[in-house]
Length: 131
Image: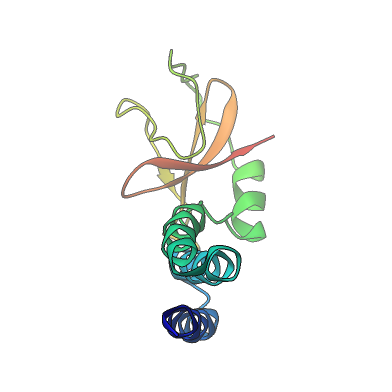
């Protein structure tokens, strides 16, 4: 009976999460809970919900217009080089200047170590490295 209740609650959460698809964490948690409940019962639902929430926090790729803008933007005249490896999900060093995307201020970019990167301006976290 308890496992049915957990599966039902997870299904309701999943349905509401899909309606608000902007929240990857909610969708990941709900999907993980449903899958975990089916496979492992109540304990599986709890574990699956946590694992799904972690996976759901993965960084969503920026819109194509942002990628195109960054790919075509003029590189700065001064070359920026840092010792740290540029890694998706990690913030850029404070010494790197980021430039906001004019049509979409939720993104910014920088050219570091001859790589164009799209970042989240508030956290400076790298969202995508343009190849």
